[in-house]
Image: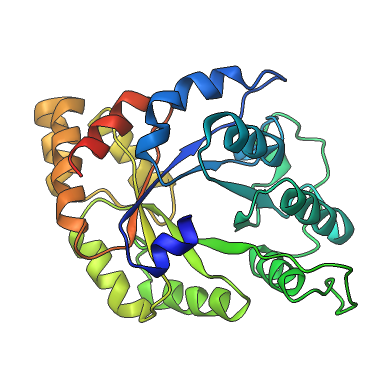
Length: 283
């Protein structure tokens, strides 16, 4: 299990998957089938960028049942009130889906249902605290439940942010609210990881994000528009000179550099699952 491997300090590999825009889970099964025995767990996103997708809890349960691959389901505060979030968590636990990544969620106005209401009764810290209370056998207000859960509670961190001290403080707040592991935004240098690790100063495990890039234009877009992601000049130069192939070689070398220093890597394949396989091969 993911939690046990992290506790034993075994290197883990996770990968992010978007649920289908429809009721058929087979495209996801087909996409990740060949990688199932090489991954520690797969993340199932929760309507990312506020666009309609299949329930992450339902898909996570199906993946675990059909592929025998452990999952980490994303849960956002955007779409459910306090009652609904707790009901979803209890249902997920009953289905055997135990790893959760707590997220505040994107504003619905950014997605394909801009007239939908964003709930946001709590943020990601409040959601982590909610899951931690369920683990103690209590609801959000401290009332006893018939049975306790045993979720492994995760959250997101941004190592590439300019204000590392502020992000480190946010990490400590999340830990205080019950977070037990972190998965991060993509990193593109060992220096970013070392700088952030010193600032965070915690034994809670971090699984660092790795996202292949197609071009220097994509790198420039990330630097300009995605907070917490910074592609350094060295990789920009390689992408400009050698394109996507050079970028993959750079990331494969980075993964080898990171391995002795981090709990694991989290791959953002952007539906290019053959690239995830290349990154796993170097391990």
